[in-house]
Amino acid sequence: MYNALIKGFSGENPIKGFEFYVRMLRANIVPDNLSFPFLVRACAQLEGIDMGIQAHGQIVKHGFENDVYVQNSLVYMYSMCGDIKAANEVFSRMLSPNVVSWTSIIAGFNKIGDVEMARELFDKMPERNLVTWSTMINGYAKNNCFEKAVELFQVLKDKGIKANETVMVSVISSYAHLGAIELGEKAHDYVVKNNLSLNVILGTALVDMYARCGSIEKAIKVFDQMPERDVLSWTALIAGFAMHGYAEKAIWFFSKMVNSGLKPRDITFTSLLSACSHGGLVEKGLELFESMKRDYGIEPRLEHYGCVVDLLGRAGKLAEAEKFVLEMPLKPNAPIWGALLGACRIHRNAEIAERVGNILIPLLPEHSGYYVLLSNIYARTNRWENVETMRQMMKEKGVKKPPGYSLIEVDGKVHNFKMGDKLHPEIEMIERKWDEILRKIRLAGYTGNTSDALFDIDEEEKENALHRHSEKLAIAYGVMRTEAPAPIRIVKNLRVCEDCHTATKLISKVFGRELIVRDRNRFHHFKEGSCSCMDYW
DNA sequence: TTAGGGTTAG
Image 1 (cartoon, rainbow, N blue to C red):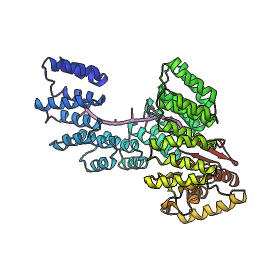
Image 2 (cartoon, rainbow, N blue to C red; image 1 turned 120 degrees about the vertical axis):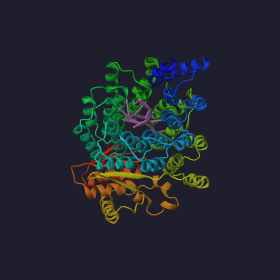
Image 3 (spheres, helix red, strand yellow; image 1 turned 120 degrees about the horizontal axis):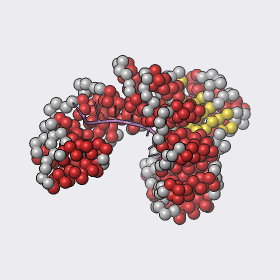
Image 4 (cartoon, helix red, strand yellow; image 1 turned 180 degrees about the vertical axis):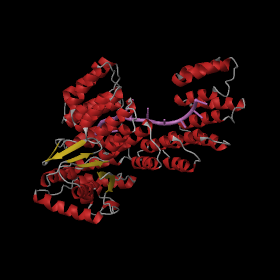
């Protein structure tokens, strides 16, 4: 009777499952080998490793530890709780692990971010099924190895195995992050051709992919086709508008969502506030921030405060933004101060920046971005001695800038450029192309802005730092390999630097090309010499 | 009858 109840509850209501488990223990009733797996799974769902360990003890005590179902559930439980050591111990003791055991341990390594080990096991296992493939592809996607994820999808296709909705979610999400619209479209075709169902998760992944790849129109089209949408589908679309700076659209869809009867979630407001920030709608943003708690009972989190700091700061209300940070009820974390520092950069305010830097750098001394930001602010306000201090501090603390990279998709292939890249097979041609571009934009008035570049010059990046930015190489490749009127689409992992921004505006004018650059924060649409971000980013 | 899926400020 208890066993049946545990089974019944564990899937959809793990807490209830626990309650019955505790009652069973009190009544000295032992779960059997069929109900233990449910119990252990319930522990995993709640990430309640202590309860899981206790259940494990019971399993051993009652001699169920050699049952494959029980063992699999333990591997799963430890994996999901992030205790890969314990998971691996159970797994390696198994006499005849089956495909579920292997898949569970692979999921465990993916969960802790060890995709290499996961892949090793994946390659080694005797037999794989679609869930295994899905686990590995998703593991790559979850750990930001998007290129690896889509490579493995290619292997799957080459083997003639048909992917299902779950696999396609990971694949499409990977293309979204890579900004690879052509490949993303192909994946969409695959979904249609194979009659996969546009369920709410797959649909949301597609909406997100099109939005992130710069085609908000297609994102809306998929959104309209979805038979069912939940709050995350709407949020993906709203986040898409935010990335492009279309604040009014974001707000319009938000009211439509609310009118359709769905309750917004905290992340919906994160996207919405970010939309207001990128679109410069200060008053509206503040109003929405107020209404979060008042109308929807959602307590603002640090992220939301961060958005408001960004909203005020970006609009030039630096004093107000600083006051807001000092008076907020939560303890401001590094990203909050970072948003304020970012605003100081836009509005060249070294005074506030210095105050913020003194708080921020001790708070997160290993984070290179803040040194760079602060240094750039000093450089822009000609405080060179401070720039030198920053450089020294970074050196002393051994802080390195993460390497920047830019992606461009040409003929269904994603090309990844790093700063000063020499690896690309066509690199010589690309460098010649860049020199040609440089000559032409110089004639149009480009002088090269070195203020942001100062910080790029560390030991490894000395030569030509500015003119070897990954973004410039990717743009040169785009100019070389694509024809107008097709836009040149670039995806960057970092924020666009001032110099690249200026250069790209001129390139759009001189070469008559439209360039769509997605950086860490948002989209920049360059056309006829100007950018959709209005130079605030 | 055990394993796998979308969203999140700067």
